[in-house]
Amino acid sequence: MTIAEIVDILDAKVLSGEELLARDVHSACGSDLMSDVLAFVKDQSVLVTGLTNAQAVRTAEMMDIICIVLVRGKIADSGMIELAKDRSVAVLQTQHSMFAACGLLYERGLRGGGKSHAKKS
Amino acid sequence: MQKNLRLHYDISGDDYTRAGEASAQLKQVLRQLGLSSSIIRKVAIAMYEGEINMVIHANGGTIDVEIDSACISLVLRDTGPGISEIDLAMKEGYSTASENVRSMGFGAGMGLPNMRKHSDYMKLESTPGVGTTVHMKISIGEE
Image (tube, rainbow over all chains, first blue to last red; front, side, top):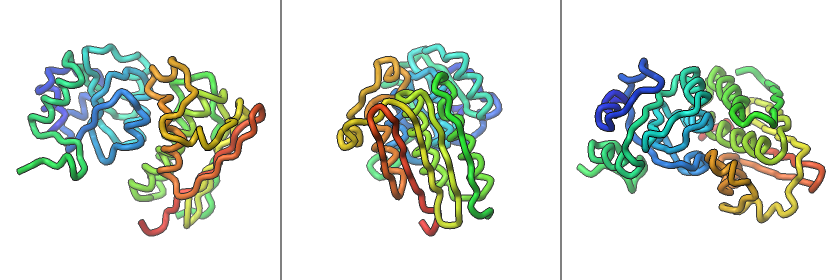
């Protein structure tokens, strides 16, 4: 799916990265804890989180994650958006909760990656 | 690839929003050197966690990087409070970070274990009241 489809599925607002909307994303992770993302995530391209500071973007940058979805309508720090624009990371904001946002994306085919989360045909 | 490239980074301890900038810069250098994305990610994660630790616990420090044809060596030095119980600090989930740090997505006791997990060699030396030095190596040979 593309980032534009995520915007559509989650009825999200694009806070940064309009130019990235056509990019394909293949898997996602959901966490507020960046150390868990750094420890356990492999080859995900979307981070669903409630963390609204620059470190969410830094973590994305380290992990080659190209899209951050802020849940529960959380307001991003100004530093976060500034950094995201500079580093070409799309930041979306949805009113859905973390659970609902992950569920909606999963329902539409986005997976967590790894064998245990493989999409069943 | 250039041989024995040496890089030095000064890590400021007073600006949490800038924590990770040095790691991002190194990641860019490694990308320009044409290293594989999995190696680059290992280095980026190991250094980023170390950089965050320096900012959270030690009011900053320095990171020296040496890249040769076989591996990337990182030496992270700080003059912070030091770690009195290294074995305990290396355990997943053990943390002395403040609530403020936790609210920023870190401080869950995963930093040092993450550094060990993503490096091929790690040695931590620390003297309470003097500071901490972490040596890490990541091989860039055959994966």
